[in-house]
Image (tube, rainbow, N blue to C red; front, side, top):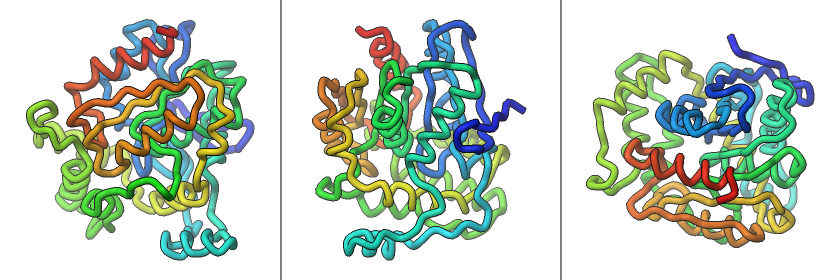
Length: 299
């Protein structure tokens, strides 16, 4: 199994790579409660075919990477309240720890610098890489993510409820129904531009489920997001060339989150797509691959 122990954080990270091993590296970082396989194979193949060494990995506490079994996360309500009164709740690990994992993966693979691309929570993680490890980044692409500012519009209720809904069982039918419910509620609502292919989604959910099911990691990752708070002032110091990609119809991380990210980072370029929600739909992959590769090449 392609697993390494990061020399800086000591965490076992599972990864896969595709493309010329001597080519410039694109590191893909996935979001909350999501395995690395949520990066579509078509996107990985497109970037590898465009001349990059593409590496994707499971964050800690998800997929085939190290789990924090038994570690307890504070409830979101308690955590938010304690943060407001100036007594933050203790969390099992921080979002910076997760950013350090990605840098540690590069260390373990002998990679000095990389283009980093993060989706949703992964966007927050690569933002922290740019804040704390700028010397390791060639470029940054933040996809459907945000600064974490509490002043920004909140997620639509149906989207956040679907994402954080507790599993009602671990049998195959229940897991598939759970995954499809998330996909419907956070995905692209424009059925003409990005049609919802239930059969394809079902197969994808089933494949991910057979790879790993670990719902216990999600509340700990969510606690890390809440703990990190607003990155706006920290992002002001970022000088890594930055691309921000965001859907105009994202119900989970509203467009304002992407706009705020681009505004916070000097020189960042914002690209928005009408009808795109909080997903990586197959019809959009050629556009995403083109934008990411073009940014990496400085075009």
